[in-house]
Image 1: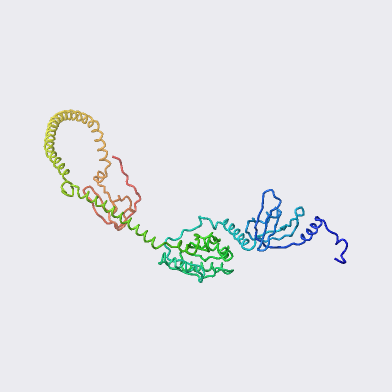
Image 2 (image 1 turned 135 degrees about the vertical axis):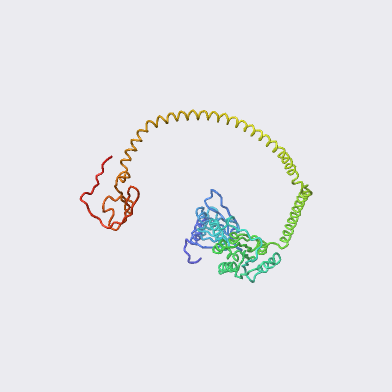
Length: 457
């Protein structure tokens, strides 16, 4: 090049050229997205080595082990990743690498990581525990269906329900199943069908990409499903698709049609079960009837029902025997008792005569002794009572009255010893020697001498 400095025209060594290129590349920091095509992460390595590509190129990458572990990403072939780093050259081999500073999953890969993290969070909270899952009603009368009213899933579910259990009543909540508003609409639809009396809720949608199914990975929807007052059956996407809604639902079906089949019994199966139950009941009733017939025949064949007198034959014979023994025993017993009584009477009469003679002799003797002792006692007291009688006669008021005195008593029967005992106007009784006089007191006069001098006899 004309006019160029002399140094620029000089040729460079390989090392100089690589150093020049290395310095230019390392100043270029970019963020890019690529699909992982190769991965080499081995114990003891200082870095993780992998290759990313797109439709037109591929690029080797390396990431120091401490940065790789801090990113939390487990690299796998086919994973779409987003990286930030700079280009660098490994001069000894003449290789270019992309030195990765930070690493994260991109696109669907990032979404899957978010879903996996949320699933782990809800699992730790117990929303996916098997013991929390509820059994479906055996024969639901009202079924709640929450899905898009325009998709194929709603027709598949209704057709399956009509075929398997046409007696069920279906309450449909048509809601969007894609987009940002879908989770809130799904929750509103579930509440609506439950309020309408649904005994089980079918939450379904047809197939789609992972991004299309993201509304069913919403945390609020998962909590709503776990708190639903009735069992929830999910049929979301196709067989390989598993959303968080499937994980927390009481029953997870692979497709909407399978969800409808899980929610209701088959009418044919129910008819077969009823027929089998009817046959078992009929067989049981027939067996019981045969048993009762045998029992009745055994009772009817007993002798007592052919001749009722058999019931009392033994007792009647026993009564006859006892009566005969009683008739024979009473006269003999009476004769024995009569003889015993006669013997006792004879012995009593003999004994009585003996006792009477002895008693009379003893009484006579004691009478004589009593008379003798009584006479002696009387003689001792005869003088005393004569003296007491003489003295009593001397002291008797009757003797005093007999000598010309009188004894006056007032109305109350008390002896009048003072004029105060018989006031004027009162009646007194005056006892004299040969009778009693009644007198009315008309006057009372006080005497100087108030006491009557009585002399002892």
